[in-house]
Amino acid sequence: METLPIDSRVLQICRNPIFVIGSPRSGTTISAVALSQHPDFWVSDETFFMHALFGVDGRVEREIDRLTSRPGGSWLRREKVSREEFLSYLGVGLNALITSRSEGKRWIDHTPIHALMAEVLTSMFPGAFFIHILRDGRRVVHSMVHLFDKLPEEKRENMRARGQLPNWSTNFRNACATWRKMTGSALDFCQKYPERGLTVRLEELERDPVEGFGGVLEFLQAEPSDSPSNYFESHRINSSFSKTVTVGDLVPDRVSEPWETWTAEQKEIFAEVAGNALASYGFVRTEEELFQSYA
Image 1 (cartoon, one colour):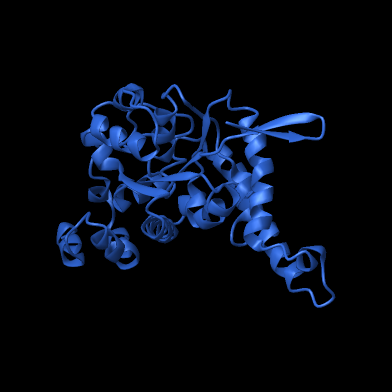
Image 2 (tube, one colour; image 1 turned 45 degrees about the vertical axis):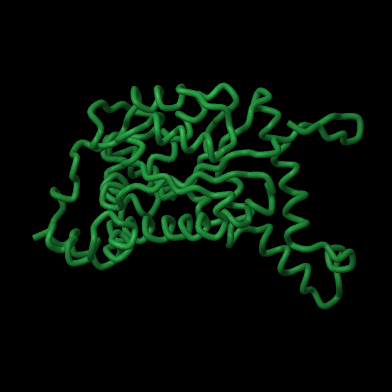
């Protein structure tokens, strides 16, 4: 931790926070919670406010563009404050806020939608590391559209009326497009910044948690620890796992190959929207193989 004096207070910031990113329903939460079992790490709930404020369509980004291009001038323009500098100073404040709750430990954020704004976060948190959890899109999409199945119909309707249901939870095509978009964005980021971002396949974590989390900890420049892999092995939530539990609001899938239960129309939609991505990420060798698996 780094100490910053501000007025009569002393604020602390975490120099190297961790962002676990990926598509919703990809295992970001269980992976982050498992990592937080490391004695040096800390995790809490998702920080939705960062995307609302700083995402591509967020208010802060719009204001930066407006004020730096304002014909009549502005403080940012006169003082030659770049977008990156402005974001870095705002990031210090948010870092101090989160650090004030992290019990002196290195904090982990696991908001999936940060996959769409990872580059912004690198400006706000210059020392941050990013772990991208990549999961087979077919399992992800199945989990998306069945996320709220256990809720009473009345509660689902209330959430729908309040706009609290993600569009991917009620529309199969949107779920496919969301997985493709967010996974592609996270992969592009990790390829562009290999020293900052690491892609980890959830299925490989399942096959060998010890090796998988060992590699993650090494990438994060953290001391070795068996605690993350031990926790992951005993708190598995996904369909191919032998033991399933509920973590927070996550509901485990019930079938190991969920796409086998899809309708012909759903299979066709997935192949059309996300089949190429699934093949390019190596989950199937070719799009033709995907269609054959649906035959």
